[in-house]
Length: 171
Image 1 (cartoon, rainbow, N blue to C red):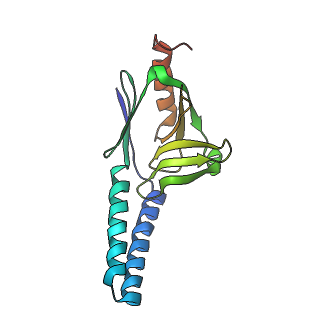
Image 2: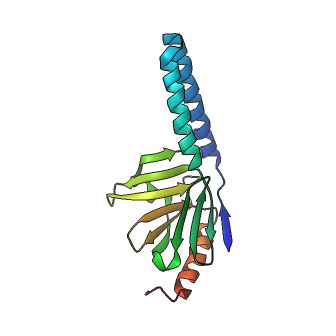
Image 3: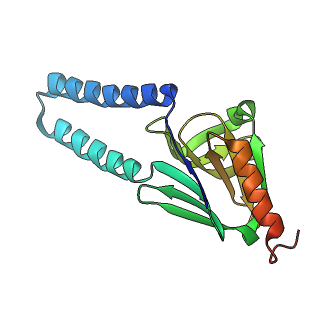
């Protein structure tokens, strides 16, 4: 079993701080414009709910285990069995310019959620703590997962070894 822990880079930390400052600025603006009141209460309620939901989906680590690849978030868990992996490859950062967030976090403690690949017009699931060092896993159902990892070459190699040793894989 090999673990690849997510670590935030300085750019992601900066974007997280900007998100918090933006939320605070809007709250202060609502206090100034409306003297607080129900608008501020609604805003704070919505922001707290959205932040709670987003926080539960922050990626923590990728584990190359005995039976498959585990993508662990704070409360979300994705398991991709080796016999369902159709391909795995490194993705260069310049190829990621075609990916836009749909229902996703873009820099708030990472990049995660559902994204749209404009080049292939397909939805992908992203679990990244930084915008770089991407690995793409495609399963037999043609679902795509983008993962960031400090050592993406090692992750790809370890998964390829497991996939090629898997007797249930027809490749």
